[in-house]
Length: 105
Image 1 (cartoon, rainbow, N blue to C red):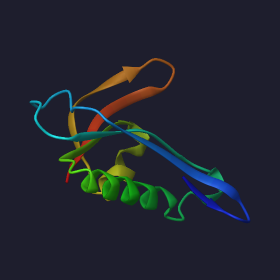
Image 2 (image 1 turned 180 degrees about the vertical axis):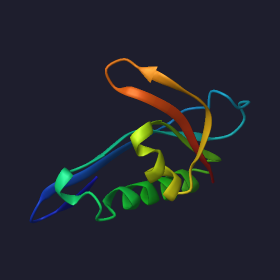
Image 3 (image 1 turned 180 degrees about the horizontal axis):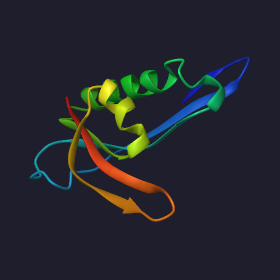
Image 4 (image 1 turned 120 degrees about the horizontal axis):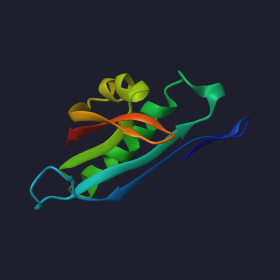
């Protein structure tokens, strides 16, 4: 969670230990389940900072992979954070097209 006294809450992220569905078990995998930033701070690096903190957390916990399901509109953001795409896209009802992304730690 990120906040500033002037703006209050500006970003949140959740991460949970969850095995990567397409890899054999045996490592400590972490799934980035959700992330959001306040519209007025987009482009300020808040999202990148949140991902960096999640990566630090996963590394300290001896994680091997951080993965997520990303909306197509967020793929570029995650690629800039060192993630790569995996597999084919699929449609999530109401939410839109998604693809798996991962970053090895």
